[in-house]
Length: 147
Image (tube, rainbow, N blue to C red; front, side, top):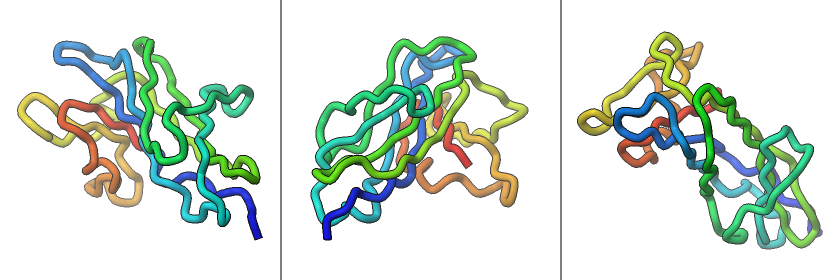
């Protein structure tokens, strides 16, 4: 029986912060495919930046797992809602958000390579455990993963 796919997994945002800047002008959004495709291939993903009021198709089709958001400004809250679509229709959503700033008091930093670092909200249960997807980031990105 065909059905819509389940929600994408592991959604997170990685801010691209250039050297000497304290915020990112762009961000990479990353995710893993749904646990179930609903017995039909994923045709594409839909992304919303306004909590599902409007949706845009993510370029690249059903095999893509990353996209770039450009034109960000300092202190901007970036909220992303994502859903997978197959020939039956869209599946349930998953969402995450991040603030476009560095905040030493609210984040734990980990040196990745020289002056570059990864940055994520400190989990309440275990302040020394990094989100699993943080290891996948390229050096130089500032990642903020939702808890």
